[in-house]
Length: 145
Image (cartoon, rainbow, N blue to C red; front, side, top):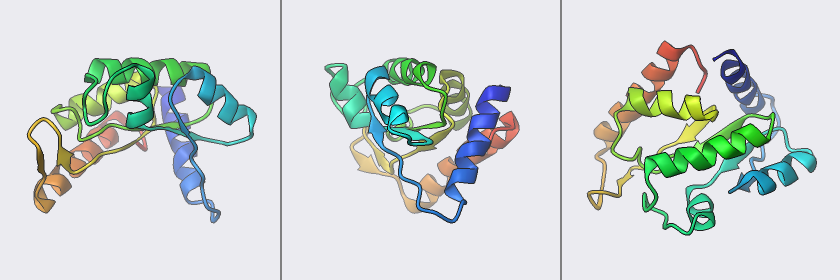
């Protein structure tokens, strides 16, 4: 977990450096390599481009396992912090999602308030509770996710 924790700390530092942090969106190892070669210190995986690159649809049209497979391939290809769009969490409990995302090598996430499997928006408190549970799971793992 040390490498993941170090990359997460670096991503947090980049967010608080006093300069705007530009996170180019990538969808595969090739695009990730191109972004790093261009000098970007971190990158982002978008759910839509990742799904499209796999011939699947966005809005949780690919499974969590498929998303994590794509994330794993990208994080293995580069040595910079990677953050990933995790849709609305793929109906996965917060602690499990954090464990699986960190295992795949991503050190940042964003979570939508649209629960795609149910075709609804989370209520504000429900979404805040899920985000809080994600934060608590990351803290428990000792990673600044």
